[in-house]
Length: 451
Ligand code: ATP
Image (cartoon, rainbow, N blue to C red; front, top):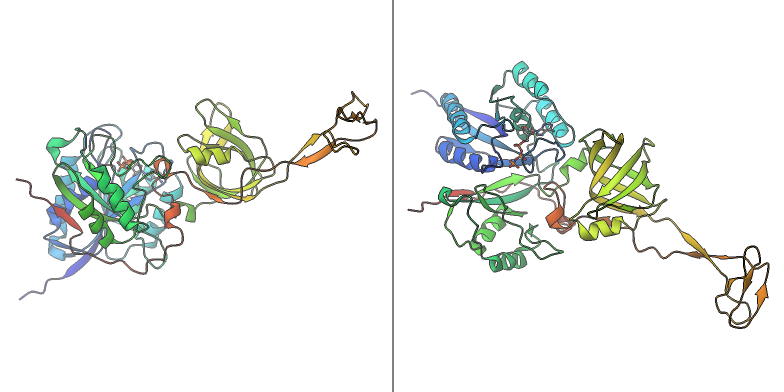
């Protein structure tokens, strides 16, 4: 009898989707269905969101990572199955460049470092190919191979509970004959679920508009996604939310969504598309652009660089508070850097902002009358002031300075759920107990048989 030897495989893939109706998480479920009987999943599939500022993303810059145990002799066959699934799934276009990376055994430090940088920098296809080739990682790509970047990053970002925050998302998928049709959802059941499970679930409903946010708008295969803290709660959410069409499948992903993981590794460097975090002193009054965007100028405390700071629609309350900032105020800015070639300026597009210092501002006005206490008026240039009520005049009495009541306070500002990026930690997640471990639930994915 020969003993069956098992091995651990880390699999990462990305860039298999397009706006025409596909999604990398959907492919993940198709692959899980194909390989589940031959392997043991040691973790939920990980949905890793990388740098949200890169210009060539389709939507939320998400990549998928698997960690599985597998018999040695099945490794090649499983890799072939995954390659075939990618080939069958992706729709060729110049913006879809699938990449798959497979790492056996321990994850080398170089990939872990790469995955941290993928959260905040713009990485090159060449570097990802170089890492994969020089370390002899099994890898495969179509087109220019850009998907290798996300693939490597999803392998390296293991969301270890010891040092990283993480969340879950349960994603449900539609039957293929319904792709592109209007999603029929019982919205009341979403309000009910949110009320029952908060704060264990988040970003289901926009706090400003009360709009249900769990369904994407486009023709993609996702019916809805619900985000939360524990996998059991995800299954509970699934049992409460009602759809008016049969679902094809669901899967629970472990993710870095809602964790601020990109800000954990960000700094004050100003480079196009980089993630920024740093203290800034405001140096200008706000300008409100057509369309409601708010622009301010500021100086970065660490490197004294001048930058523009922008808050965009549709973050209404957020933007309104940003528009109350004045020169001398200090903030910690969190966002993405964008270079404007025409004006040769850099703008930090705010994802969140902490007001840490509010400066004093004054305006000058006429003094109160020393006789009757009414506000005096100017008696003309260099002629002092006069009182219209009692007739008192004084050619030497100066103007007085009055402190402006500032309409802001020291606080952390986060745009409402509707305007938030996937990685941003929402208010609801502040103050929750840190998760110590990953609890694996039995029915973490399912394919429904809708005959
Ligand atoms: P979806 O959210 O629907 O899955 P997406 O927004 O993830 O789509 P993709 O089509 O996967 O978009 O495109 C993102 C591309 O950017 C991928 O090829 C990925 O490898 C690459 N990428 C990810 N992070 C970085 C980074 N930090 N630097 C450069 N490229 C990156």
